[in-house]
Image (cartoon, rainbow, N blue to C red; front, side, top):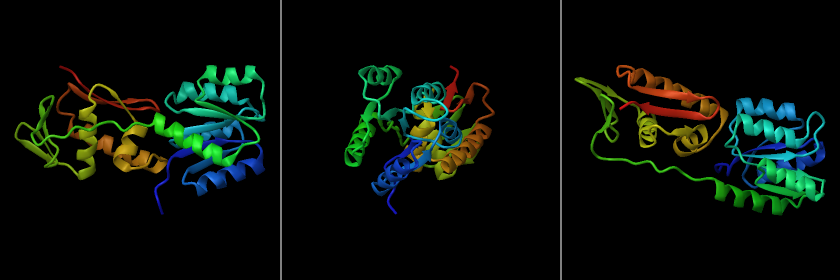
Length: 233
C-alpha cells in the first residue's frame, strides 16, 4: 500500500456528505479521520497528528469558526479550510480573518477539493534540512559522530541505534529551535500518526538519559507542538 499523502481531520455533521468525502479523499491517497461534532474533533486532535483540518461551519455543538479558534490555540501549526453552505461575503471574510487557508462553498466538487488540498499542502509543507558531517559534532561536553552512531562523554562511548542517531542529528541540526512533531515524524518516520508519535516520545526519553551528564544540555517538551534541544553556552 502506498504512503498516504497527508493525514486530514474532516469535520462534517452531515453523515452522507461526511461519508462520501471521506471515501473520495481516501481513494485519492489521504488518511482521513471523520468527526461529526466539534467535541469529537477536539478529542481526535488530542490523540492524533494532522497535517490539515477541513471544517464545516455549521456544527450541532459549536460553529466551525469557534472550533477553528480552539484548534489555533491548541495546535497553531495545523492549517485549516472551511466547507460551508454559507455564501455571504461576511462569512467568507470571517473565515479568512481567523486564519483559514481556503474557503469552499457547498455543494462541493470533489475533484476540485482534492486539487486544492494538494496545492495547499505543497505550499505549506516544507522539509527541514538536516545537516550531516563526517567529523564528530560537539554537543556541550559530548562528541557526537552521526555516521558511526556514537555519542561520547569523556572516555565513555554510547552506541546509538540508527533511529536514535537520526533523531539526535535532527535535533542538533536545529538546536535551540522548535522541532515540531510533524517535522520530525514526516522526516524520520515518513508519516505523522499517533503510533509514531508514541515511538518518538520513547526515543526522546532515551536521548535525555544519554545526555543527562551535562546539565547544560536539555531536550525541552513544548506542549502539543514538539521539542527543543537547548544547549547553554
